[in-house]
Amino acid sequence: MNYKISVIDGDGIGPEVCAAAIAVLNAAGKKSGHKFEFSHVLMGGAAIDACGEPLPKKTVEICKKSGAALLGAVGGPKWDGLPGHLRPEAGLLRIRKALGLYANIRPAILLDALKETCPLRADIRDGGIDIVVVRELTGGIYFGKRNTVSRKNGNDYAYDTEKYSVKEIERIAEKAFEIAKKRKKKIVSVDKANVLDSSRLWRRTVRKMSAEYPDIEVTDMLVDNAAMQLVKNPSQFDVVLTGNMFGDILSDEAAMITGSIGILASASLGKGRFGLYEPIHGSAPDIAGTDRANPIATVLSAAMMLRTSFDLDAEAAAVERAVNAVLKKNIRTADIKENGSEIVGCKRMGEAIAEEILR
Ligand code: IPM
Ligand code: MG
Image 1 (tube, rainbow, N blue to C red):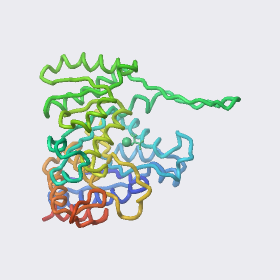
Image 2: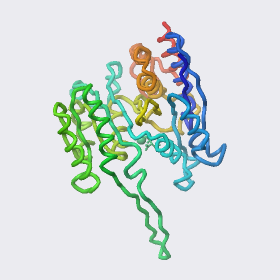
Image 3: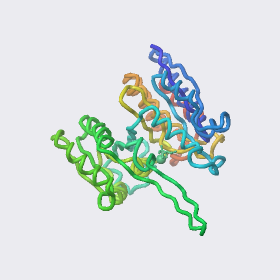
Image 4: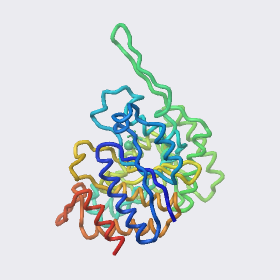
């Protein structure tokens, strides 16, 4: 079969990690007889430079015509001075909204091969880490009313608004319940209900829904406690359900305790099969263009794409197996190096995974 994939290379290390993931997808295609067609489209700083806006209409149109989209990363110091709505990140927020991708699924798994790169104490780490963060992606403070107001006396002010409706909470909670069904059937719903109204509505709505899923255990946890529990006892978590901003923050933490932010993949999903597959890391401008980035988060995002948007379970598993095999051989990018590692660049890591698939 032929599968159409839009590639949003983006900024910083984005193009490098995408190129590595494409090499891996091509290998998976070659092995299984499928063909992946890639259309490169502009978003973020690259789009600002080429056409003066972070998300050109054409990008959305091309994405809508493909089965899935792969994203590298957006942003960088070059565009930091621009007003909020013209920043590279605005392109990412807009495309998530335009494509109705309200559910961001971020699996944080401590791979056997990466045990030694986990920054947690051995007795904590040995309990195992296998968490899926289910982050609401098109609501909350990211999309609420905001403004910066100048005042004559110089005491300017600015505000952002956290807002959630019952419907928004229900549809993301539903995703978490469906995912939990296929796992250990445990959801921790994270909020700040001791302070925020939006969190109290969140908690009430999730609790009400849990009556429909009697075999799933739902626990509420305040976000500050959740941040602590993630490093104190990460093994207690199965599915973490949370809003947009808390999910952004906690998923970086979850990524780090599994070895490196360079390995955590994600799928941004809506109602249909289409998904935007994005590593959770940023554009890392400090190492961009030096072939030092870790492409594994993007490669594993591509594996999520194969499974979720294209139903290619065997091919997805082959990619994941290849990643594991390469790591077991102690072939590493610098961020996950151990004693005796063969340290490779981004491109070589992609090749090594591709070769492993074709072995
Ligand atoms: C992420 C990123 C984005 C977000 C930024 C780049 C807008 O941090 O996907 O986690 O906050 O959603
Ligand atoms: Mg983030």
